[in-house]
Length: 452
Image (cartoon, rainbow, N blue to C red; front, side, top):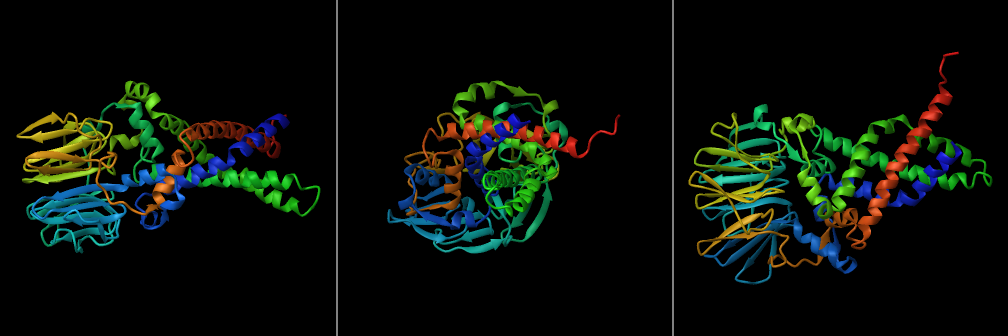
């Protein structure tokens, strides 16, 4: 038992600081719709180049109005407008999920409702659903389809009045698909791969909070125990910290922590493991409950000519009444948008495709997970914030979210920092094993068996 305790101590001392960084940053990254993560910024003067570059990924829409010689870039840093090649000007300081234009009018899906602009994006006013988190929208003539927090649909008229609303309930036979390990790994690590109703995210939060408490109390115990011979009053502090550190409340966090550690290692080296994770298929029978409902998994929507479409992890589903849905096209539909009668679908870990004249086709030679489509001289131009050539606002500060993300994936420190995260994850597994063994032995000592 002495050796076990010593192994536990050294594993904790070596990995504690890294585990605190991973747990705290992971907790905030789980809640990427919190406004302060984007309105709180840090000057680029104090940040490495890699972190500054990552901030571009917060832009998720880029529209060009050729007639007005106007460009609009939007994302979690707000909405920026540039006229006639001049410098970008921020016109709305609200995190934006999606920006679209219909018949010269702009609509923005934001964390504070749907906003509208009638003057080339220069001035914005609240259109509908105030204080609601709108994650995706689609407009067709005088009708608008919106998604609230990836789980509820709202159908609106041109005045912003609600015509119909509801929650997506898809027949189980249309949700019974095998998935690659790569999809499952990402879903579990990002808090959406086990249960519905936010329980997966809650489990990740619970695990992150307990990991932080375990690391902090572990360090304090290590500090005080070394000084117990100097001051006797440290004994009370040690007794309290030990009770918290060895609390049985940590038990529900053990499995989520194991999953986070293992999936984190795989994601740290996603390129190396890509072939293995794509080839490894998980049968539908063995998938967790969330994959058989996906009622909180509406990533994109489209409404055209009386037909409703939603996009989720499995693909594109179609309906004519917003109640009965059927699978129409398979493959993660990250973003959907229509232009001139064509429906463009941006895939996440799946091919980009287009729906035109009743047929689906793969969009070859297009950027992965593109976020906007502009038709210039009859040709579709795709925008992706991952492209180096993207003409986006040059900001002098970086969002807190981006800083936390770069710390979490290690790019803030160095390209090789992922191996430090890997070592910390492996040591976390060792800590969980030795910690459970020590807890069990302590439990047996306090509550010995009644057998003679």
